[in-house]
Image 1 (spheres, rainbow, N blue to C red):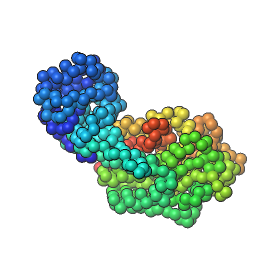
Image 2: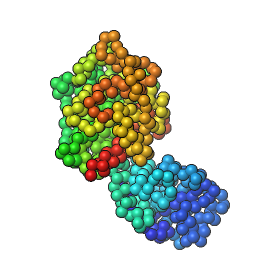
Image 3: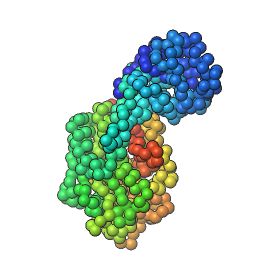
Image 4: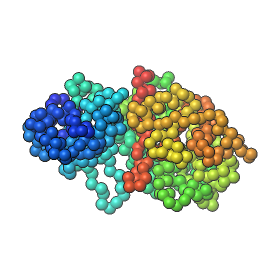
Length: 495
């Protein structure tokens, strides 16, 4: 899809459909007023008839509007003017795209003129690009009859002349993030008999070829040589061979310490011997969304050619029940040398991540962020709106929280107090892999923190945000926007 920036009068914009906004109470946005005046109050007349009140995400298509070059004018409701926020803006853009008549191939948006608290033209344009591409996303369905692609192939964004340069830069960043989100969605949505650890390794190699990354895909023998007993303990129940994927984007100064992203890549999670209930178990193909978000973020930073050093580390395997599977009561020895009593084989994500966090030490990172669909407890705590954020460094946590606010891919800072650590005590090993029901997302983070003492570290629990269930079942691509924005901000600081 092509995005372009245009200036001038909206009524003179040559397009299949021109989108203008209407607030509640039939109050026209500035561009809507301009079009209305050129059209001899054609919009006002329609609104007075009661066809539209301006409620958020409501839409109305007008045809053959006098003195307007666009073939159609689409009115989109913005809700109450005094309450208009980033969320409402995204909802309005999405509603407009969904309401486009079939056959519309190009559309003009005027909505970046709208005032949003703590938002500038760059943020509004970038978010418009991301939202349009998100609204036109087609699931990579494996069907004989493929879903029809959206007809829309060109989007014109109307801005003031003085905003042109900033808007053009924003289009590039929005496209980069959107392409990363799309990859993360595509990987998450694939069935687990296709998206295996080997497949993820192949996708990493493809990214490396496309963008010039360094890549290694370590096999079982190499993983064993590293001493990753905890990771291999989870993998041992599956016929699918485990992989450790390592990507490097080296566009910063040679002396610059890299940021490491560590993604949980459980390509299917049955729970192992601690078997999950059968209902909705198919959604456990999304247990590799941490890995997908790392690959998606690498695609985004490759598109943006960020002047930064970034390492991606993805431990990936299945968690299956079999005669060779890990059992409750087994004790594993991690790469760090710490022993772990496995009380529940369904708490496997932390077992593969802990070895990856130890592996990250060799890169002497400036910061490490791990991303994982780790705990159902986090979904209970925060629902499906915010990712859980834990960190051993408040400065790093603030960077990630700020990036989440800026990208509208928000996280919430959770406690990581020493008070919770004792819940992981074990009579038979250095620690247990679970700490009981109370504070489950916190004790999972506490477990990981024991392997991240040598660097600034943060953990994003995306169990509630990585995919949607129900009628809209599918990957969300989160937290690619948060991670990419975080890295963009770091790259800006190192200039």
